[in-house]
Image: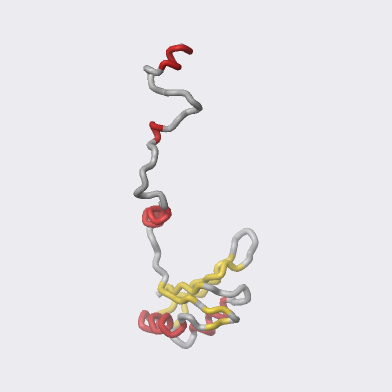
Length: 121
């Protein structure tokens, strides 16, 4: 099971997480996420732990524990599909919005019967 570990301090390494989760089951992989441009830690990571029962036990026991001065947030990692993420970001959803055809184009009306178009044409 992939376990999300959040609120990591900058000093936490993959070995620290490996030691913390090592007593619960077999660790397949440990990743501490870093910014690709700067190399600085992003404050979260992932631990892939098997079997599922051991991973569940680790989540329950290690949630809100202290590691290097910060309280960890430990939960199961749930992957969301891209459309689901986009729907979550639409803060304006449900609010009336202008449609593309109703937008103004620099005070120029695109309809063929507009008086402005007849003057210029």
